[in-house]
Length: 274
Length: 292
Image (cartoon, rainbow over all chains, first blue to last red; front, side):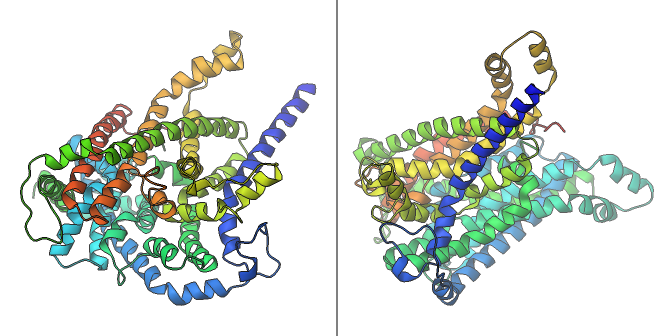
């Protein structure tokens, strides 16, 4: 009995510590949101206000008025970078998982490209896009984002397909299904959650990218991260407006991540942990 | 069509896309790195490895190397330490864990540009909450990212905030995958908690710790966004990492040839690490199964 009490006290203490850590780690996000709704005369005052009695939506209205083009650019870029990655991932992932094409080295070469550093690519990409007259277009950003999304998608989808038991496909074949029919009826439904997870991750990587979009866009095709970084320079004192835009760029991603919950670690560790 | 041909047909488009966005630009980048490439001038004379040599003689470049190495060492130390402590704490809370872990992972999803901007808000000298707390504790407010001594510290704090959850989650998954039998026999043998941790848990966790170390190092080597927003490498060059340095000489001072060469000083150590990473993944069979 005494031992059990001790155990309960220990667990409560640990829980308490963890709750404090959670509060601390969410504090910067709270502060960003707070800054985005504080009336102007409460912004950046000393000492700071830790809450606001009269929240205002004026900065959010500003953001919805001014940042819509950038928001749409980010959406379009992330959508196509994801779509192409999923198509590439599904086809070659299937070939890797089922036919063992390219042996071990080709899939691992593709995996290693996940770490291809954007900074190495920015000089050649910039010069190439300049020659192709693609600077400041969504196309240029989509093409460069493929280096972020495609290797990840191929590797993840290969893993998901490998989890579908081969026997299931073979049984369907014996029952008279065609190869394509097997993929449609057996494989695709089983890997559907994996495809969704992979898409969400690709979308997040592309959405959060800053460096490619920074060197390849000027105004027309500017994405949200570039807009946020630029607002800092152009509007030194517009804390509320910048905060609202930053929050608008961040909150959808956090919501997507909540859907990913179960698969978050698997994706972040590139499938090394299931 | 034979099976092999069909498989080839499925893989080919991906390989072509990747080759054209990776291999061709790499060759292009190598060739630019041996030219005096100024974008405003149409002629780009060949100058051999002069760009490479100049970098090695340039104190700003050497400073960028040292900033990057400092960041790698500091981040690994704190992120692994804190991440391991958090993972061990979560391990004690089997029920609560399911809610806590996703919340703790939220900082990882914040876009790096916004992390830099958040730093601007919370470390603000006059009205930031951090200095307010310091004042409450009876300390003077600090200049944080505006101070030559603390700028790098400020960036490290933000980066540790963003990345420790990743280390925590990966190590926790590793801890959950450890077999239970060795623990039972250790208890029978009367080992204490510390002995169990150092002689059992840590050695068994080693593959996953190595994986985390490599992945984190690879990421720090490329770090760019937070500095761009918060300090632009300053004050002076105190927070100029290799990536930022490459960007600045290429796209601020338009010395594209020099930037291409600088990028290769990131590419070379990175390739070695990636090779090592791939070896690790191959040894693990590409996966470490989590025990149910």
